[in-house]
Length: 371
Image 1 (cartoon, rainbow, N blue to C red):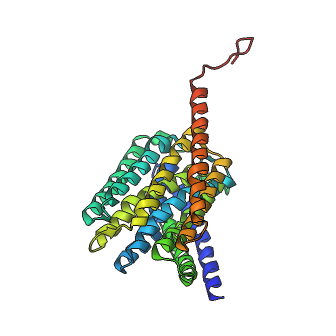
Image 2: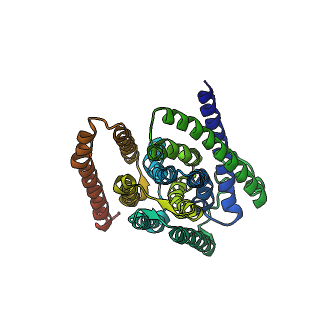
Image 3: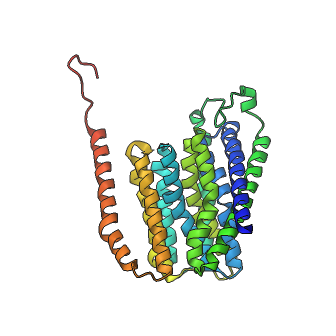
């Protein structure tokens, strides 16, 4: 009964915090002359990555590095497959061109960099410093680029609100929006902590390992701010902010959260052989899969969202079967490797090829010469 109350209380705090954060962030974009996509990639992404940072650093200091690494890797997988999939199922998402040509390639590059750092079985403290420095450089680049192109800022005075207030009300002081975002972030962190506590207690009672708990229960729990923020952003019409929040959160999870955790840990972060053999490759493959899906039409359709969610359910099922040494594990792995994954790759390749062919084809004209 107590675990149920804790879970429901955490959920309520998450929803309220997400609403405050989205309201503050969307108006802050206008107050600072930034586009919603930049605010989603920076302020909102860093804010919603706060639970991952708190839990990963706490796990490293408490002597449970598998939980810390599993939390970060699992969160990145959940952000794309589960959260982006669920949001796309609710409403098809429009993808900003900047995400396709800049931010998703950076997410792929960060995933490959972390994978390369982990090959020797440990992410050292100096490597953590490199990741943190890269995060700072990324933030400065985004802000500078946004300030050099102020014409991209939307003119809609009701950005992210839609409550019909006048222009003066839609452009309140920057300090007020920062306070609104800070309150929303505090509620998000508190709600995520309550949910993770309840879920971890249940998973621990089932005898799951620290790595599996980090990859599943804790990862989904710390990704709940992204779920709430992205869903509410898309429903409010801020689809740039919704997708930017997810991509930016993945980048900061790898650069800022993982890098900061490696810096704090006395001997860096050890990488388990199972994570190096399976989970890190899955995280990298998920990042790569975003590129063709985002590129085709610059839109994430409902069927693509369903594909993402289906893959996340399959990934979670695999982890649970592997943890319990289930008899069907080998058959499940064979079906995924020999049937499902090749079929998905062929589908994405065909869709991308058709899109490129349609873009390259000259426009057709009617008999009277009109397009």
